[in-house]
Length: 187
Length: 410
Image (cartoon, rainbow over all chains, first blue to last red; front, side):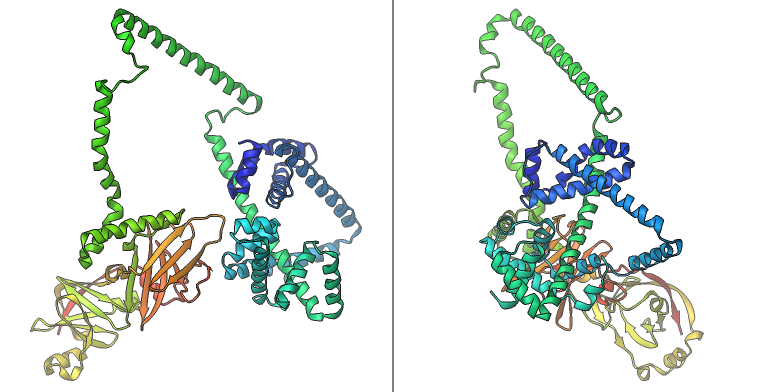
C-alpha cells in the first residue's frame, strides 16, 4: 500500500490498515535499542507515534511533507528522548528523597490504582449515551476532527448542525455525570 | 442557541484553545462572575480528559490487534524465515527463477505448437485468434452455460425463500404474494448495505405464564412454565399411579392429575377431599408408597419448542467493529425493527419476545450469551449480557436436563 492509498483508506474509515504501519517498527526498534531502550520501549513509543499520526491525519493536521515512515520515526525518536529525560529527572529527584517517603509514595500510588478510574467512569457514561453521540464525541474530542469533516462523516447538513449535535451530546453526557464523583476520580 | 448550549460551546472552545477574541471576553466574564460556570468548567475538563483517555486506551488495544494480525500476515508470506536484505534477495531470486520457468514453458509450448500446425498448414488461417460462431466447441459451451443458469438460480435462492415458504404454509397466502414479499425483503437488504437480516424463523414469540402446563406422551411428561423451577424440585417430584391407571403428580406438597395428552394442558391441583378414601389415606404417607417397574421421564419444555414465529419484528445485524456493541429499536407504526451492532453469529442468534401479563420483554440469545433488550427507548443502547441470577425471564433460555423417575403405587 502506498502512502497515498493508506491515507485515503484511513480517511474513509478503515482504521485497521494502521496495522500496515508496523512494517516501519524495525527501524524504531534498532534506534531505541542503541539508545538505552529495549524492544518493549520501542513498541510503546511506536504505538504512541501511530496514535499521533492517526489523530493528525483524521483531524486534517497531517501534511504529506515527508514519507509516513520518516514521520513515524521522527515522532518515535522524540517520544523516546522525552521519556529518557523524564526518567533522568525522576532519578535525580529520587536520589534526594528519603527512603521512607518513597515507600509512602508507592503506597498512595497503589491505592489510587485500585479505585475507580476516570476513563472507566466515562466509558460507562458514554455507553449509556449510545450512538451516534458516542462516536461523535470520540471523533470530536479524542481525534479532534473538525466540524466540516464531522458533518460529512455523520451525515449532518452542515458544520453548524454537526456542532449543535455535538453540544447536545455533551450536555446529555454532563447530565449523567455527578460533579462530586467525577472530580474525585484519578486519571 | 440555548443558553446552556452556548456555555458548553464556550467551554468546548476553551478546552480546545479555540476561543475568538470576543468569546474569550465572554468566557472570562463568566469565570469571574459565575461560580456555577466554574464548576461546569471543571466537570467538562474531567469529561474531556476521561474521553481522551478512554479512547486512547481502546485504540491501543485495537492497535495491538492490528499488530498481531500484521505479524501473522507476515508469517504467512512464503519467505518469512529470511529477513531484511536477504529476504529481498530471495524474492528477486524467486522472481528470476519463475520467469525462467515460465519462459521455458512458453518456449516449449510455442515450439511444439509450431511443429503441430506446420504439419497441417491448412488449419493456420482459422486459428484461435478469432473465435467464430461456427466454432463448435465454443457454442456447445455457451449452450451449456445458458441451460444451466435457470437451474442454478433457484437453488441459490432456495434458502432465502424457504422461510417465506413456511410462512406460506402457515397462513395460506397466495403464491404470488409470497414471492413478492420475498422480493421486497431482498430490496430492503440492498438498501441497508452491510446489514444482515435475521431469518424470520429465528425471531420468536413466547408467552410466559407462571402456571404450569404439561404434555404426557408415551412415558415422557414435559412441563412448561415456571423458569424458577430448579432441578432440585424436579427431583423431589413424584408420580403415582393408582389401580385405575390414573396418574397423579406430587410436586411441592400439592397433587396434580396428569393424563396422557399430546396437547399442552394446564396442571390442575387436586383437592385431597375428592380422592377416593383408600387412595387418600395411603397418599398421606408418601414414604410408604411402593415402587413399580414403570419409569417416567420428566422433562422441562424448552422455550425453543413452544414459541411461535414473530413476523412483526425485523432484526438486522451490523458488524461494525469500530463501534461499541449496541442495539436500537425503530418503529414505524405497525412494524418494529431491531438493529444490532455487534459481532454476533447471526446464524446462531435468536431474538425472543417474551410476554408476561401482556408486557413484552425482548431478548437476544446467541448460544450461552443472553442479552436483555430494553424496548422503551428508541435510542441506541449498549448490549450488555444479562445476569441470569438476577433476570428471571432469562432463565427460560437455559436448557434443562430431564429426570428419570420411577412411578409409585399406593
